[in-house]
Image (cartoon, rainbow, N blue to C red; front, top):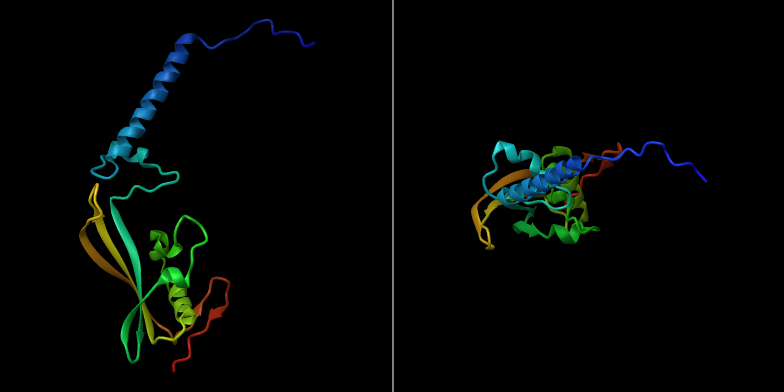
Length: 170
């Protein structure tokens, strides 16, 4: 048997009330910021925009890929079929960190050239962006931004030091 401590030190009840009030205020802060996140967000609300699993974004975007062939011009490519997603988190090429990295986009473009059944002359990637309208599927203020245009005959260095050969043109 272990002896009981001589003095039983307990947290005063007023501290429990203070802790509870802090937790309630913190929960209310996050709820308010969550509701404001799709509209105007003041500077005091920025710490409450922390995202664990989901992304509340006031805009939407998609990456469009096209291949240029000698006889047909630009033809749209279905990237989801060429690069299937293994996880529910979506495609890597749709993430903004991926789209902003020129090296990653070059590897994606060269890989697209190699994976297509018929080798194109060039591939290009365009980002379509728009503002979401709450409660609808409407796309307000759409615009597009070119990401990269890649000649399929050009070699691209991969991160591990090897090169992805350029596709032989017909």
